[in-house]
Image 1 (cartoon, rainbow, N blue to C red):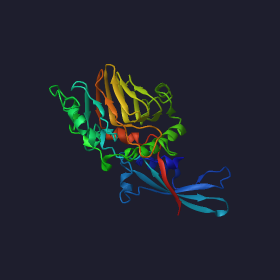
Image 2: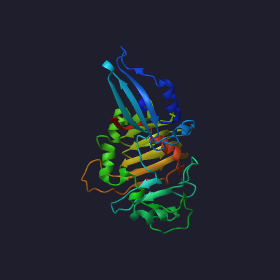
Image 3: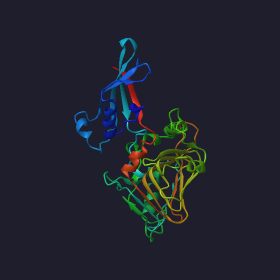
Image 4: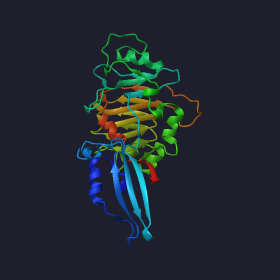
Length: 343
């Protein structure tokens, strides 16, 4: 078990201290043992020893070499590569909203005193990213709303919402995560053999209602330092509470942001593709949001429908990119073994 939980320099040191290069018994009669021979960062081989003393060092991968010792002096050398992330994807926008339907996006943010969205890294370590990324056909609509106009570009006299950067990005292959490149890929991501639904079921984190998720032992991860992985196959109301949740949250129904709420991590509203704001109070989301409208089953030629992102309801909301919150969200399902070989 220790071999697949290595994630940082502190764990590298702890593993080496625990084994100290000695063989560890895995059978009561000592006929089967293993010995950790080497742990290294394959992407930074020259600096791994120096980095191990840095508590902020977080390798993306570790290569672990183990010697297995069995009866009659049998020996086997195994090499395991462990990824730090359960999920790997680049975050190019705070809110990503694909749409291939030709129907207009439902997009409303309210005035400057209602919603603020910022691509500046709240963690203070990463470069700024786009606040919103939309399909080309929705660029004018979102840009008009951000400028304080109605979606059709009229009535531009009011104060616009606080959005930085002010211009939305246009989605293309280079800034769209792999799981949103097509509806087929989105379905595989959610419902494939190794998809998020099965992963959630295996971890006991699959729920058919938002109420069941909130009342579960881990809730939405609010009391877990690194958050939790939560899959809600239905609607969810996020809030009220502080913090309401942390980690990776997948919702296939409508997501309603209600009252005072806080979430640190990545929210994926993949299914109905609708996000609403209601109730009074103030809410914060630090991380990133993906919103996509598609049916769970259908033809490979299906395209994403028009999403809904409407935070103009009661209360106020702040949505801001956080590289630290995203980093933790990618790891909430445990660390992934990407390769095993005998050498």
